[in-house]
Image (cartoon, rainbow, N blue to C red; front, top):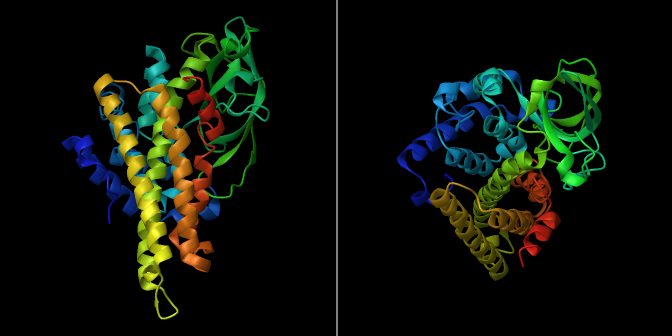
Length: 383
């Protein structure tokens, strides 16, 4: 059964694109994801195939090599990759293609021409390097520095929990370029991975999402040209926030789609599994639990639809509603996933069943792109 999205949100071009994404997932991701999980890495050939299918840089204009779609095409990808258990093992890698949109939005013309076409072709992989050992959701606490030396920036510091750390060709690195307090001193600088002094650290093994590469990177007097500055100096937080709001609606959509898949898998399981002379579904407790899940998912879908309609009407994402969605939807997902595992019994703890991978991937969603606690803080500030 396909993901039950709200069809009225999408135009004909989005529905056609959805079928493309579904076909790509079925032919290129689902048959290969177990191998990627074993290797903790997605091969470079995957990105070339993704580019050929037209699902990279979907909102990049044609003149820069993109298909000329819009942000809603990215949300279609989020729904479809969230719905498949295979996506539970590699979603952050595919969603990391959002770096193309961040770079395009913030770059000057020369940078766009230099990087964007190769990114859309799947030939150039970018990572976004924000998190540090002592700085997670609090971006303003970043310590990595970039010091201007003539026509170059000299970069020092380290980053951790970086998606694509061991495979990306270049990174958008958030660094401190001045002594201005907090976020005012932050900038974003492009650092190519072949620069002297750039180091890839250890690969980090995760509880779930094991096909997606995550690791550490560091900078020891790495020199890059002054023109590698992305946007204006001191505007690093603004650049990050532009991408963060995208994430704060993308991951709730993934959370909802994954919840629906878990729910469907569980309904099928309990209707076929018997105990004490009847199916698990026949127990009133099971029916009540499933009723609660279905209701919560309906409430979450309604709010997601409201956020998307606001974007369609205004051309921008609402900061407060995105924070609310990022706070509530992954926590709703956690309740659904936990209930689904429980209804599977011992089978729910086995990787042979899709619910196992969906469950472990879901735990990341309350942390990734801003923790639920930080979202509460942001919402509280609006009161």
